[in-house]
Length: 132
Image (cartoon, rainbow, N blue to C red):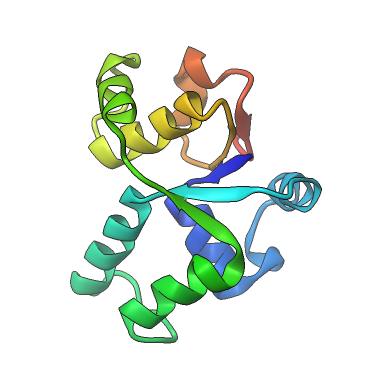
């Protein structure tokens, strides 16, 4: 399984493979199970509300297209994920990003992201796809 960071997921759904780094496209093509953390839906909704993201469909419709109809599974935030997000190294202050990282760890999955801070996590050393 590959957990997609929010920006990877949105860019892929809106812009297709051309909107992603080739390393991410290659990994996604080779993997049959793609997922997001449910916190990514929150992040998208917040970006839309704040006017920082414009979607081609109303938010509720876009979320259905971007999950159910695209084959991307939305993984719930469990107690284990919540506690893991607090237990990981204190590098990233953004709780949503910490939850996404913890989701990949708990599900023993790869994580597709180009977040410049993610490579600093020892916990992601063997999981990260897309960062330099």
